[in-house]
Each structure stands twice: as structure tokens, then as C-alpha cells.
Image (tube, rainbow, N blue to C red; front, side, top):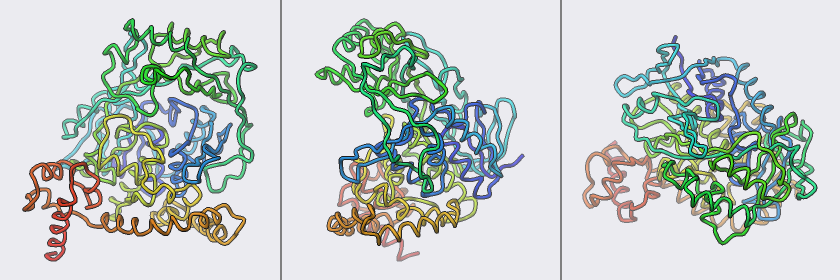
Length: 563
């Protein structure tokens, strides 16, 4: 059987990729290890947050699915940084984890042009540097014109809980085996990363009378353009804190060699900006407490997620440090926290389209590219899907600039600079974050979504009408922001124009093959290794000096004259 597009993995990246290509009329197959775990929220039960919420809004403007499902299954909506400037204000939705999974699974199963298969992909097929399909554990060879790999933490995954090590990409689920070797055989460099999750708590054993309540916002901020108010019952979260006793328990476990992160058991780098509680206690030893949010995982469960307590310490240590905290003196654990170590593809080996440079038609999206988070995965899946479709239809690729979207910042950071630790999106990663606000997302990206065909025309027209009205209505928040920051926005337009011009200068291939006179050996080696698509991308590579950029520009102009 021949498919246009084959997607490996049914997580947040895989769902967006498969839905995108199927909706664009391509015959698509989604292969995943378990059809019962499509779109499972492996870690925290939430969508959005600072930087991440911006990505979800961008997914909505481009025609993706995550924002709609988040709104339909949200049980606690808040605007983060509400007291700060509009550039850093962001929407966050506490989701009912099981309802989210079921809703997305229903959409995936009902989408035309999209087939599903429960199986394991153990190898990739290619001919003359062109992907031709995959090899599966049970179904044999399956042919496809394009393959999108979205394996998350399952690629060579290994779980760590105290001294116990076991194969797995998620608790109770086997890792992907064989695919790492196949990627390596195709010339892709792999690395090793680590992430983790928190223990889950029994809400019936928590003393909420001792805790600070955090109510959802009313009216609720939401993600999808059409959403007006929550569908589900809204619930509160609660706040507790670690203390010196908590830290003592953790420090003693580290010193006695019971912490996998510190005894040499785990080699992969963990997320700097979402550290485990072991890392927090060690790296911020001067702090006497850390904030912990107790977040309900759904309306039909009594499990609670203690956000901020990611750990791989032994169960006995986990229960000890939990019971040292206010409101948790009698708490019981339903599931232990653990760490997962997995393989990833160094993303500098990808084009800005997320297609690999080595193998035509092979795309990578999500945590396999070194990112962390549902939102970062979903936007990559969407962009990989758009570009796989564009390539098969012989259309122009969809590449978002850093001035256009956080998605553009995310992908450019990955493919230009690479990563040595799980990459997480923050508003601070954007040079001009005031231009990339949540409130102007439809002006920025809806035309692009409509051009690709993924954003339905009627929805695009409604977004356009909304934008026109918002910019005319002096009671409109959108109007007030544009007026308040008009001077700043005007000043940065020249900087943005200069950046756009640099990103429009496509570097000819011969620059990577023959050393341009005047370029140092170091610069030439960096150009050969990274093969930046444009002069703007080259300028963001460490060591590519202004003088080197000028020489590259000369080579570009010379190539244009001889074209």
C-alpha cells in the first residue's frame, strides 16, 4: 500500500502533522504504538503558558487543532502575567487529561484521508537519498512519499525511578526500538536528553484547608478564535511550598547516592528551565522554599499533579519530601515520579522546513528535535505537515520568520543553533516580542494559514473582519495596545525590514562546497556543517563575523548575476 505521507507517533506533534496533511487532501497514515494513547498528556495536565500560549494561538491562526481541543476540555483558564505588559501576557489552560485525549482521538479517527495503524516502526526505507517508506514490526514494509518522525521520548527511551531502570518512553509503554539505528545509518547524528515527571497525589488525602486557593479567571481567556466561554465545569488549583525540611530530605538522598541525576545513572542533559526538584534544591541552595501548584488532572479523577516536583528519586524519598509540605502531611501517592532518557536528532541537520538535509522527504518534529513541551511539539508537527504537503504539491515551502511568529523563533533557534538540552519556548527568546503578541496573532498568521489551504476560507474571513473592527474600535484592547506602543512599533519596523532582507538572501550551494576567497577555515567549516539557508540564518551562527557575512553576500550577488 502506498501513502503520500506517513507519520510515526501519535503524540501532540504527530496528531497535528497527520491532521494537517490529511486535511490538505493527502493520503496519510499515522502509525503509533498504542491507538489508546493518542494525544496523551504524558506530564502536566495543561496547555499554554508564557511563550507556550503564544504558540497555541499561532496554531489556531494557521488552522491547527490543539487550541480547539484545549478549549473544549479546559477546567481552569488563566492569563499569566496579567499585571505586566502585553508582550508577556499569556493564556494557560488546565485540561482534563482524559477528556483531552479522547477528544483529539475522536477528531483523528473521523478525519477523511487519514488512516491509523497500531504498530512499531523499526526502520526507514530510502533510495538515492530519498525516503521511500518504513519497515514495521508487524505489518512489514509500508511505502510513502514523505515520512514525518514524531517519536517524542520513545526513541530509545529508558525510565529511571531510584536505582530501577527499565525500557520505556512513558510509564507502562514500550520504547521505539530499531529506529535510532536506522536514523544513524542514514547519516543523522543522535544525542541523548532527559526529561521527567511528577508524582501524582490522591486529592482525598490532601488537607486543602491549609492551602491557598487559586481560582480560574472569569471571564475565561481562551485559545480558539470562536471560543466564548468554557464548556466544562471550572475548578480551582491550590498552592503549597517546599521548605527546609523538604530540602533536607532531598539533599540527604543526593548525598547518599540515591539520586539518578547525581549518581551517574542518567547521562542525558535535562531541561534547564523546567528542572527537577533535585536540581532546584542543588542549584538554588540559598532558597528556603519553592512554589508548588496542586493541579487537578480532571473532573472524573481524584489524582492531582504537583507542578514543580519533577523527580526520579526513590519512592520512599518521594513520600518523605511530599509529607514535609503544608497540606500534604498525610498525602498518598497514586503514581511515582520518574525520569525518562531518550534519543534525539541534532536539529542543525534539518532545513527550516524541518526536512532532513540528508534524506529528501524525511521530516522530524517534536521532542525528537530536542524540544520539551506539548505546545512546542504541536507547532512543529503542524509546520512539518505543511511543508511535507507543500513539497508533494510542488508549492513554495512554509517558513515563518522570527519577526512573524514564535514558531519562526523556535524553528530558527533549533536548525541554526541546535541544542544541548531540552529546548523550551519563552517570550525572551524573541528579539521583538512586542510584535509577537497573542492579540495580533490573526493579523500575523491567518493570511498564511489561508494561503496554505489549512485555514478554511470562512474562518479566515471572520478573522479578517474581527481584525478590521478591533483596529477601528477605541474601546478595543487591540486598538489601545497599538496606540500605546505606536512609537516603539514604528521604530522597530526598520530593524525588521533589515532582518527580512537578510533572510531573503538565499545562499547558493557552491558557498558550502568551495571556500570563498577571504573566508577563514573556521567560518568555512561552520558553513559546511550548518549549511544555513539564508544570510540571516548564517548571521545567527556563532563565529560568523560581520566580515564573513559581507563575503558571503558578495558570493550571493555574484551568483545572482550569473543566474
